[in-house]
Every structure is written in C-alpha cells, then in structure tokens.
Image 1 (cartoon, one colour):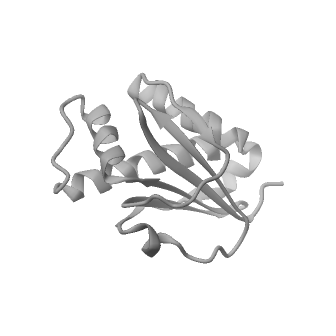
Image 2 (image 1 turned 135 degrees about the vertical axis):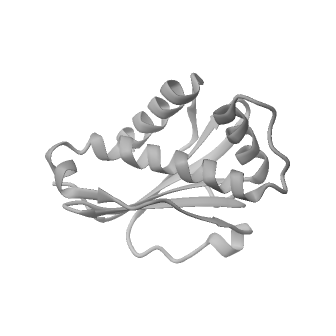
Amino acid sequence: MRQIDEAVAEVFQVMLDKPCAVIHASCPCLAQVRASVSLAGAVQAQCSVEFSTESARQLTSAFLGEAPPDPSDEAILADTVGELCNMIAGGWKKRLGPQACDTNLSVPSTSLCRPVECAAPPQAPVHSRAYSFDGSSFIVSLTLIKAPG
C-alpha cells in the first residue's frame, strides 16, 4: 500500500497543491460516488475510489478552483472522481517498474450509489485505505488479481 499512498499524495500535491494523509488502514465502504480503473496485462488489478457526495463536492471544488457544485450536479461529481481515480491508478502503475510497460489502464467507470449497492464480494485480495484532505475523507481500494513480479 506504500505505493498507493505515494500515488495519492503525489496527485493531491501536484494537481491540487493540497496535502492528503492516510487516516485509517482499512475501512467500510462510504460510497455515494465511486470510480474504478482496471489494469490489465503483466499486472491485473482494479483501483477504485469512493466518496460521499459532500467529499466529492469538496474534491470537485479543489479541481475547479471554485465554490463546490450543487449536490444535484451528479455528472460533474462523477467525472471528477473518475479523473482522480485515473490519476491515482496511473501513479501506482508508474511505480511498478518494468511491468508498467506491459500493463494498460482502462478508462474510468463511475457510479452513483448507496454504500450497500457498492459492496460486492471481492474476487481477489482487496487493500483499502481512507485518506483525508481539507477535512474531507475518501477511500482508495486496490484489488490485486495478478500481482506485480
């Protein structure tokens, strides 16, 4: 998970000029806005991020540099969470070393749901962490299907 922690910190520092810290080593789903990116090739995995609507609004505000959007503007919230997931997955991929060359990222898929709808039985080991930025929290999960190396 150290590589995911590094990728998350890098995305928030470089893209948003904000610190982002681990607050829990593992935690339950809190998703109302969820995005995932699949990795296929030498490494097979899925990276997902989960946000409450309020945390997704704070993230969107940070990305756009303006006041948080209305909670009913679900499309912009989903797009922002999807883009963050893509950046985190890409940041993790670049830390894979030689396997990165033979691993492809999918486009992000997003969903708006209640936490119970997001809970699905894992197909492989899932590593999750909760992070915090500007008082808002979110979860990053990494499901390894075929591990690096």
